[in-house]
Length: 98
Image (cartoon, rainbow, N blue to C red; front, side, top):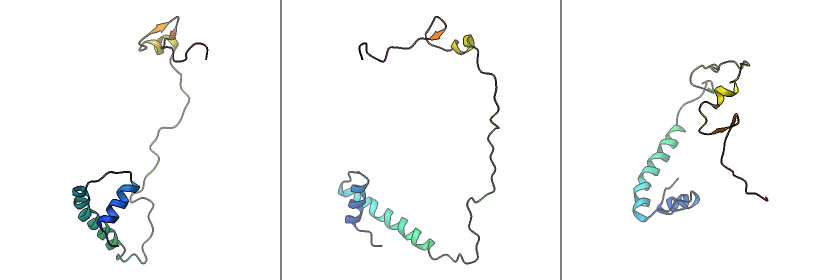
């Protein structure tokens, strides 16, 4: 693929980027290098290789989801910045009459 300044401007437009001419000229060799690398990957001999989903074996390392006791109300309120009558006190977010 031929990488031109017009292509860089088009890609910038699709990406909602505003590039001045100096930025277009700076990006041009970087984009050419990147595309050349991807084209070189197409030249690799892959015949007979097994497809990989992950390069290493992995297993689920998350803990099991076991029910546990929750916090008691006083303990839950210990870090509350404001409390009132055993509840979290929050600023009003809904105007009256709505």
